[in-house]
Image 1: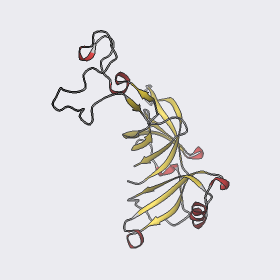
Image 2: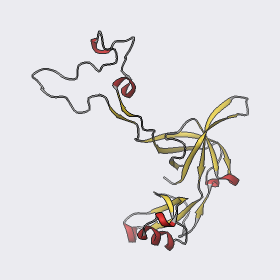
Image 3: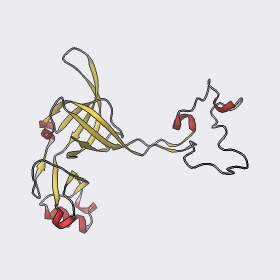
Image 4: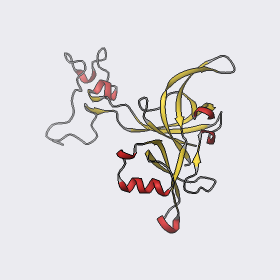
Length: 205
């Protein structure tokens, strides 16, 4: 789907027309520069590569620097491909936040906050204290039994156990665009989006 690259600024709330206080996320979306236009003839598929957020030249390797120079733009930090844009673009074209309209819906993809190594209660929502899961009588946050006896004599793949939590690619669909602020390259979407403040987001129409 077509869209833009953005950065999560934080959360706030606005009042709707009927007086309700609506929680929303503030996202800096664009300006994004077209750094490559892929076609069926040259690449086997059609897509538009967009780049976002300034990057120091000393932190950019030579292949990347040459790639951005070809598009007549400065080095960027985040590069993402989008497909199925309605209009055609050329190298160096810029897309801004005015690509989105108020009261429309978007899908947002980001990397969720990493929580480190966590137990089954926090990671998978096991009952824990009060519900005493799996018959545990003296260890209320323990996972309980994880397998059978001589058969299958192993733990099945996908067993919900303790482990690294968060840091996953998460997509939230159908978030309503509350407000578009073109002069500051900001959009406000209803509700929360994955990721910490300052993390990159992919906003798709």
